[in-house]
Image (tube, rainbow, N blue to C red; front, side, top):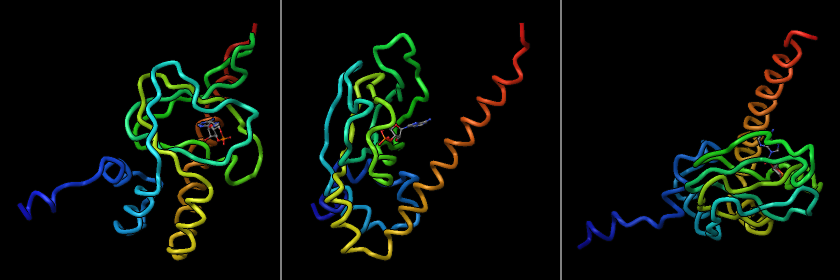
Length: 162
Ligand code: CMP
């Protein structure tokens, strides 16, 4: 019985453990963050964020896949990236205080864990030693994304002209 109790792990905690964004943070602190998150399920095709909206939350993908879409519903609509399980989105508005840079659409049924700005602020007050770890991990992810964009721009520039 005791063993069964010890093995039980809420799904949001299971989803948060092993997320690269939380690398360097103790398991207790990851649990606290996970338990502060709200779970939402989005069916395929449903919009999670709309480009231009104000953003007061950011999201971790528990299970699923989302598309990052620029110019949704316009002739210039383009899918910038696809993000899968254990990846995150919504950090740009959080950091810059700017409207959403792109729309986010579920590419298949997706379980999303939502952390509000207030939940993150509360976490930072209780665990100040991990605030900079999370910011560093976000910076590393932004750097990876920029690297991918640089690669795509460079290879588009190499395409034969004419
Ligand atoms: P935000 O601007 O808050 O809302 C839209 C989100 O899409 C943005 O935060 C990032 O999390 C994500 N995003 C924007 N551009 C890219 C990209 N090129 N690659 C991956 N994710 C992106």
